[in-house]
Image (cartoon, rainbow over all chains, first blue to last red; front, side):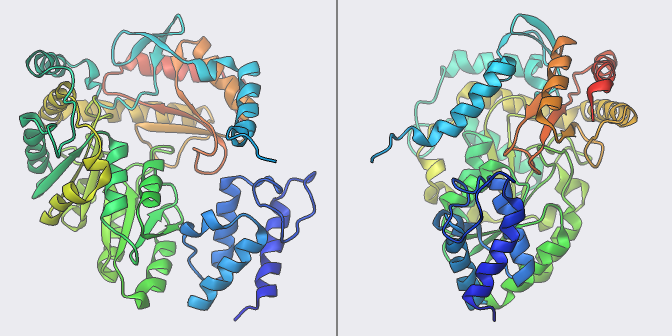
Length: 83
Length: 396
């Protein structure tokens, strides 16, 4: 099973190339939409990549609770734990 | 500091402002005068309409108009009430029976729009602890219905049955109800669901299946019953959802099923209970349109002739069209300015098509979306093709 840090690092690795070149450095506490400028399509792409990476299905019901990279990591960790 | 409730719209307002400054037409398309199912005066200019979802061209059908006028005269302009109160007229009940007969199903429920049909069904038929597996390209009304209900919602990649099976497999050990949701023809790209394969997975994993035939009713199948009929899997589809605002040329929606329990939706679904029922005029024209759909298959044939002809022409011209010929022909653009230039060019040539901007598009690009009609003449299809041809220098 992946640790919290591993999950977080994997998400950071996926998110970094998606952020506009003139955007801020990606850190766990930044807001995916407001700080990193990701739109809903990019967020869905991130979820699909994570689903493949961790071999899980991510319900879109988690999205209202996800604002930051760290929030996403927490949700993914919960899903991995439940699998 | 407390921000204004309107601050959240700032980005949207800026984007709109930029569009207004450079491309003011986009937000200001007004149909000044509707001349026929395929022609209008738009912002003062005569226009050939190639983006109306009016697949059979029945909005100006004589029988439909007469039926609608009679209903207004006899029953008034509106029902002023919910189906659960004073809003069930004899016409609503008759149309439900006629749709059950057409689809060969035991029961049918009408809704006030196709959007409401999806809102009602998706929010109610499954709930907490149950799972919806929906195709990623499903319409916003399906997503909104999911959001309104309490079920867990998981997307699978568009038309990817291997991805669907992977997700069904993961759910096996949960021992819960799973509802798969797909569309007959997808509204943006005009492609069809691989329904026979999806049905086989549905049966293998014991799931339920909804097919939204909004864009395929009247368009696919020997009798116009949609993709389920064409794929010969009608018996295996649990719920068919549809709309009256496309092939049937009015407004309204429905769900039909062999599960008699569908009737309980009338009592359990808030979008059914807490809205006014459709006006008699819409119900009457829909009933007439359903008869035309059933009795005049030549409309469907003519629609497909038009669709194949334009699809082939645009493909030959080098436009990036969707994956298969369809009455919905969408051209993808990565660059918004380029798409807008072609869209404006078409308007200058007197042709209106839909321009669809992200996030309403499947892959974040921009679409110029044509939807064809049985009412288009061969000459009009030629004119649409010629307008695109004259703009080939500006397409990708």
